[in-house]
Length: 81
Image (cartoon, rainbow, N blue to C red; front, side):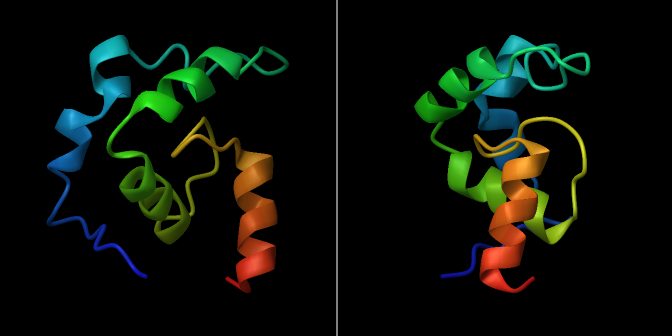
């Protein structure tokens, strides 16, 4: 299943919990924990759309859809992206 994450349809970002908590958790300093960001993501209704957006747009930094960049890279390899 593919979720539409085009630049035209970014309304999901306003509903995302990260928009309400701030970016510090989701873009931590190198070597810092992403545990809190992932906890927030697990509670977020827009998690699947967020992850698809990050994969479609090759987001290289931060936690998107509950996954770190290394985890997203692994998922891309598995999916063949």
